[in-house]
Image 1 (cartoon, rainbow, N blue to C red):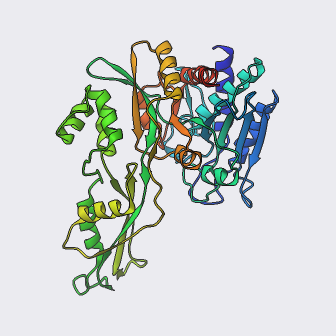
Image 2 (cartoon, rainbow, N blue to C red; image 1 turned 180 degrees about the vertical axis):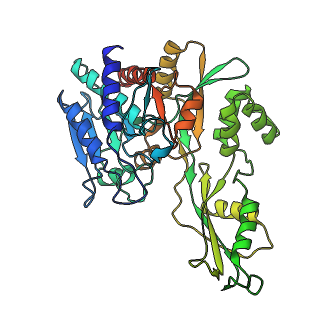
Image 3 (cartoon, helix red, strand yellow; image 1 turned 30 degrees about the horizontal axis):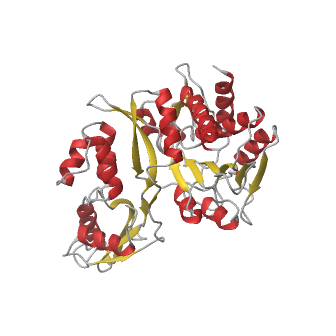
Length: 443
């Protein structure tokens, strides 16, 4: 290992060992443990660090670190972004304990957060520290934002709140999670993804209506549960009815060599056949998904309920409105069953940044050095990231990129929110190299 690889692996292991599981509750997370550790690490070379927490949530602090620019106000500013919370685990499913940060002989670092996103938080921290201790200074401000509560957001103590509480944090440019995956296509090309945007979300609750009754006489009343079963059957897995969208056309244009096509379903199928992961990604991008994820009905075993509900995790393209989502859900369910629609949370819009510009140019230049025959695939994420809040608050040109050139995409994708999350240590050191290049190229 080179010294920077040793350093980034050690730092990543340190912060993975803090259990910051965000189990969907305001008092979970404990991200302050990671924020403090990173502040101490960066403070060794004099980097300004603040732990910023919402009142009453001192255990869920965000780290705000800044290297002041020498030409502040005239030169662009750059934020390197990641989150310090992780999704919960069931330890019974893991090959290695999820918070022990085991490094195996084949070069993989195992642990919750290795990919999402403590590994690349560590890489970004190491890059900033290396820049400062080498004597380099940026023209514009260089930020590290390691934030809380990204995985759930219900406590509202992370990026959205931070940007509202701190109007001084308005970077011109940012790089966050997303992208960096290496796709070896069936036609022989190598593509590397860079996330230019992501879908938003507008969850729906569908409540099937019936009549309550005693469960011992199943035909006497009108149990809502069978009606709900019919609703769920009509929703199916929740894939969208495909619609044209400029960002999806942009991806298809790179994959197919042209965005001039007549049949969207045929284009999605042809592009999806180029790689097994594209077979799943592309259909999910082509409209409003509505995956059924939570259900509920009677509070008592012996009572047939008058109402039974399912919640749909609806993911929406940029530009989609509340009315669009309602129309899509109603169209999918159709007639012949009585139901009510409600909305458990407000709409968070999808958003995107331009597919050209200085960040894209810097990524392309670095990828050309590492993988000379690869092409960039500007992509839209199926999930949601804090980049949306940065775009909304300050019109930040926000992108997602961290290199995963050694970790196979099958390992990468299976690790997100799943057991046995792991990343190859070569990708951590590559991420340090990338962020060194990015900061020097932009600032």
